[in-house]
Amino acid sequence: MTNEKIISKEDLELKIKDLKSELDNSQKELDVLKKDFYTCQGRLKEIRKEKKELADDLKEFEMMKLDLDLLNAQKLQDDNNRIQHRIHITKKFLDEARKDIEFRDKVIEDLVKRKFTDRSRNILPKSYIVYKNK
Image 1 (cartoon, rainbow, N blue to C red):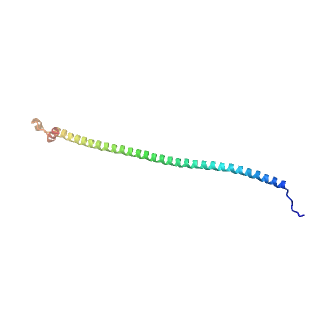
Image 2: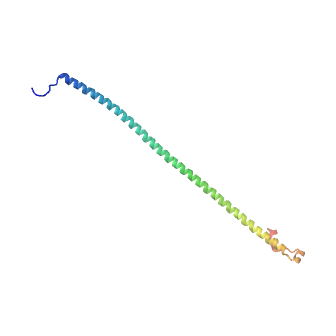
Image 3: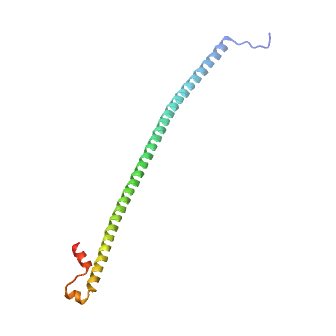
């Protein structure tokens, strides 16, 4: 005979049984890996969804912050306008008061500078007459 080995039927059946066992183990490992893969894939979808929600929330918060900043800026502008208006009115009143004081000083000065004859005849200066008629 030749150098070829003769494989018995039992050896072949044993070999087939071992290969079936190895195939079953490989199939079980594959099933576990598939389960892990699907679990990871599901988790990845959840993470992507969370990321999108967080990005949307961040965008919303940024818009709210901008709205708040704009509201604060508008309030500051309104306050500034109110103060400027108050300054304008106060300046107007102060200018009027200054003019009135200057006019009264002129009246007093004219009354003090009257001559004796004007006093004795009770002649009043024109500025005093204007002052009385106000």
